[in-house]
Length: 208
Image (cartoon, rainbow, N blue to C red; front, side):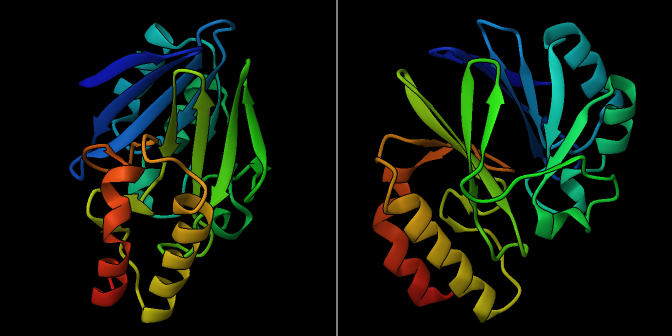
């Protein structure tokens, strides 16, 4: 598997691109405790399992950001091979083909060893999509799933869904996070809150 691995304060982060849709899989590890959270077991399960056994043996949990199948094609095989606990939002869990062991919603917190990840609900791309916010003294990362990309919000199926997603992005992301927050999304390259902030009105005007 190709990917990048870097350290942010007490966290070791890995970003791995899998499958034909270049889905990003994230591995969030506490360097102190070895505890690991996998985000979106999107595809290439056999290689992903091998990578985790080799590089992140402390993995116990896997969170799926939203119900679209390209983000959980590899979930069943990965969970079975590694005995992972599955985590998803209540509103999207029914659309994921693997049973969810634990539900998390906006405002909840996930513990990964000594790391704390804040769950941010971003509705609109799917009914109950979630992002994860990791704050450290060395920098903050928002793992946005498919709700925020370089250049705009995630795809929505109706004007109502677009309005909902923009409302959540503005109130729960842009109104509360600083410009230097890094945004690793569900596909493609990272961005920052500061790079996207000037374009909010433009996105609203164009409607996507």
